[in-house]
Image (cartoon, rainbow, N blue to C red):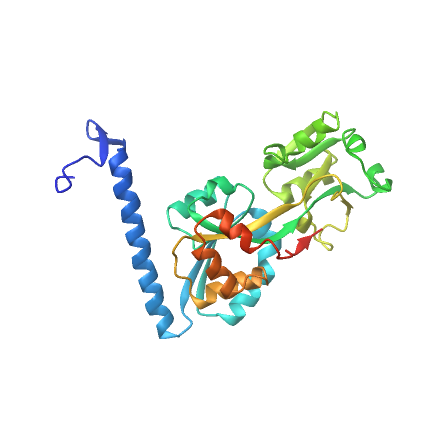
Length: 285
């Protein structure tokens, strides 16, 4: 601060209370410099060609539990010398990890407004499914309607009742007031309480395991609720190593190195979106 001749922090006594507006600009520039240093280090490591390195991923429980295991298994077979760090959290926690440069990739669904510091590329789409115990009356319905679903207590995700495509709004458009028995962030928790008879579960389609959930009936709900898109994000201007490109393509085969580089060079989110306008994303039903 003495060298800069202006305060970076506001103080209350000996305590730093908050960053000044000018201080924020300094910190933002310092972070950009640190990212450039990191990119130079990655470039040097890539030139060695020894396959060593690390990959840190921030994602949600559903992705970590149901989508990433087969991807990570193949990745580690190809790159046994790459240290993999998986950080699980909420959208807000993952966004904080990305701002603090604790992760190389964020993998999340929705909440794009929290990740304006990242280049977001679409990976796949998924639908919600209804889960009930064997013998439940809904399992005998030829096609479940919102009106029918509204007759039962519901167990679903916390985020399922917020946002423009929320369950609350979908029920409201049908003139139905849902009875929410429980919300949770974890699909396994939701299914546990469905088994206990607390209510009808609504979970992500990929959160249904045919073997582990054989005691539950999974019912298609794609006609009731809109599809969601899961994306992967990385820092603007980041230099990605070869194994990082490979990880993204294992996660979503359409994410070629060329397409990822073009997305990284796009100047706006709309520019990135235009690159994928004609790409048929994989769909989990």
